[in-house]
Image (cartoon, rainbow, N blue to C red; front, side, top):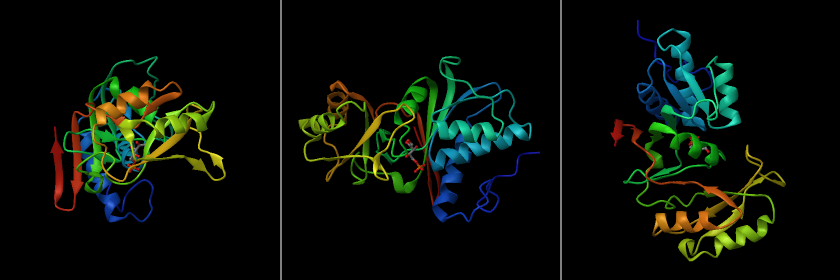
Amino acid sequence: KPAAPVTAKRSVAMKAVSKQDELKIQAAHKAVEYVQSDMVVGLGTGSTAAFAVERIGQLLKEGQLKNIIGVPTSIRTLEQAKALGIPLATLDEQPKLNVAIDGADEVDNNLDVVKGRGGALLREKMVELAADKFVCIVDDSKMVSGLGGSKLAMPVEIVQFCDKYTLKRIQSLPEVAGCEAKLRMDGDKPYVTDNSNYIVDLYFQEPIKDVHAASKAILDLVGVVDHGLFLNMVDVCIIAAPDGVKLME
Ligand code: 5RP
């Protein structure tokens, strides 16, 4: 008997679920159709990915999936997956993944995406690059005509050492000209990632002109660990909208 879908009303979280969460659930459940027994699966981070992790846990519990190994992209996801009884491994133990499922902050028509507003960009990029298939799951509010266009943050993970210096160097790169760079805060202290680094959030007035040039220029700066531009990485994007779920490949 097929597993009953986790609907808004029956979400494990058992909280009132918004219309947007209902879309996230639809995208997440569609993505979990890519997961089969005996697979090693990258488990993303964020509110949309959490619904996919929840679904995998449910299917394992009901015996409809067997022998799954999850590779979490953050401590948050590790804790969620552990609580759901999903067997876990690291990339050291499982360097080759069959599929990874994760959300995104912005998606353009080339399926280039911005990730990392949840702060997990480095582990997400490492895990998703190791997967044969990266399935990105979003509701339609994440679609943009150009990355940076949502006017929300594009994160850059940097080492803590001389963070102000690195922030200024990022902001003065011609490839991101006009952006405003802010150190991400957690109350009155800098936000610290799972890798003990800081995050500089870049805010753009206009979409980034050349995302590949920006990606390279930012990464070339010593002191930068990685950034939230995930270019040429997504194999399938599942977009849930009020009029249905669409796939882009
Ligand atoms: C975390 C991420 C998330 O996938 C991204 O922020 C989307 O999150 P949400 O599904 O909550 O909107 O990159 O680092």
